[in-house]
Length: 222
Image (tube, rainbow, N blue to C red):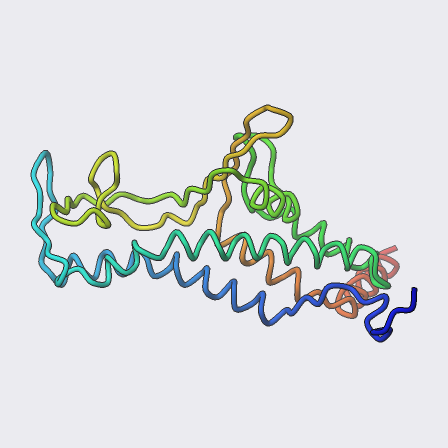
């Protein structure tokens, strides 16, 4: 069969590094803004910390930023990490079969030594393994550091179990199953983002230059 659009034959998926950077930017901002929004709102409104039992009445009008953050944070986090997981896996596949595969694998091994997260408290996550767990997770749970405040009148500002509101801790808990066996993984968001940025800015020339300098220094030391 004749392929009318012959110009696309042999082409790979288009992976836009700037789009990946913007996703990293969005994800970072959600997590970094969380604590600041909670603390600035509670301080500005002069909400006292509570020890023991009790509640603080906080109207919707006075808590617009808190409500906005809680309304959309999970949706944006879930959407963004899933897109990143798919894009980074595709980028990884392409680089491993490309002309610069050896240099890329060299850099990847260094990136995988960073602390991206772990599986069930034991196995350390590589960047690709982290992407796999994101894609195949059945539950996604961004973790919160709880604040010692209780908000009485708005469900969006209450934890479903304790009614204590908090801010994002920087970790995401992922749960799923493989071969009917449950697994649980913890992802460190900031380290994950830093690893992604290092990965997509792969520069084989710099790696080759470093390797050459290391080899030269080794020979001179002999």
